[in-house]
Length: 272
Image 1 (cartoon, one colour):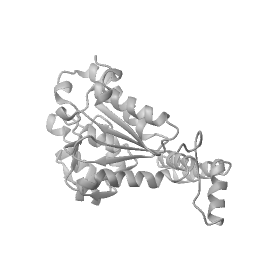
Image 2: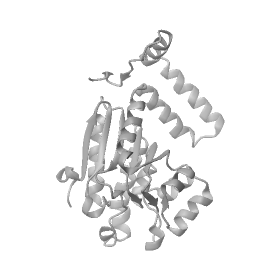
Image 3: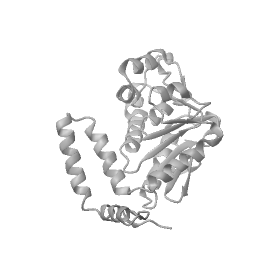
Image 4: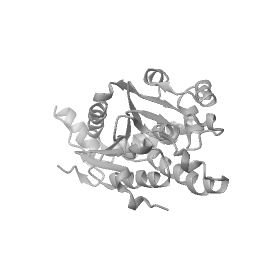
């Protein structure tokens, strides 16, 4: 089997100040997911996550046609129950969950088709910008399947249940305006300006405290699955921990002194 280390070209990475950029780069298959592609996504993500200077991670397609056009059907059709469950299924769930629970905010810049596994990857990101020309969907039902990369569980937690069922039962894609109306994407922009808009948003987030962003993300991720009383107690404990971090003193001091705050990364002052 091809390993992730053997195909680093499948996902290109760059660093722009405090923002890490991942570009999916399998154009001949519209960035479709097979095991080497999943391994490349995992490797690229882990490299950016380990970089203490990176505070926010942006994901997009390397060309205009696709974000990720789904699972590689020529690969999936060769699988049987055990190879799906023990190999591909285990890998896709591990990689997507790792991104979902990342300490660092993630932004999807959906530049083209995001179908099946591509939309499931999008559902694991924190914020989403979508090109006006792009479309998203979960078409697995048309293949005799249903979403198996987390989509059947995450979508209904992010939009009304009846709307999630409609998307998955019909398998029909939706356009950017509909995705925004459902709350699946935060902003719709022309494709030509998508990457710049995503990077500008990422830079805005990166100007905040990395520690506060991390703990806020954890509070929301875990709290949404708790009863409200437990979630409020969890919030109180997390904010209590945060008060001991030097970013709080810096942020409050900067406000009083009417100057921009100079927050720290988890590993020390931000590299220049």
